[in-house]
Length: 114
Image (cartoon, rainbow, N blue to C red; front, side, top):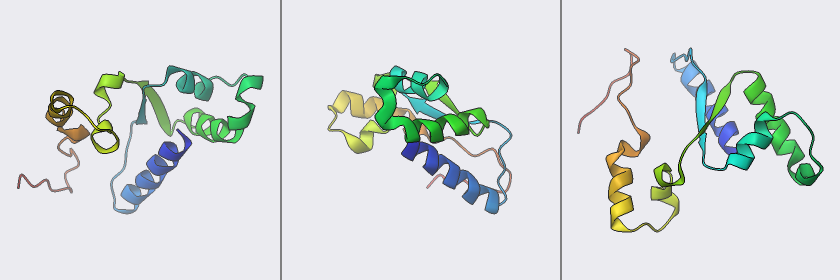
């Protein structure tokens, strides 16, 4: 999660430099319920000692309202297209979700249908 959060922050900074500003929280979709709970729960747990720094970084970003972890079903993880060998049915299903891409709503962005 920490790597994903740092990438979200970098992309947000890049888009801000390009003049695209967000008024809503950036969503971080995660299918691991335990990871979401550990990241949002400020109570220290002895069994998570080895991941303390990563959790602190993610929790700090959640508390500063930069990101919002969102639950997602494992079957709906679009990133699996790039990271797993999928059967054709699951691949077609994830492709039909447009790989998470939607048309931009910002007026200064252009979207090509090519």
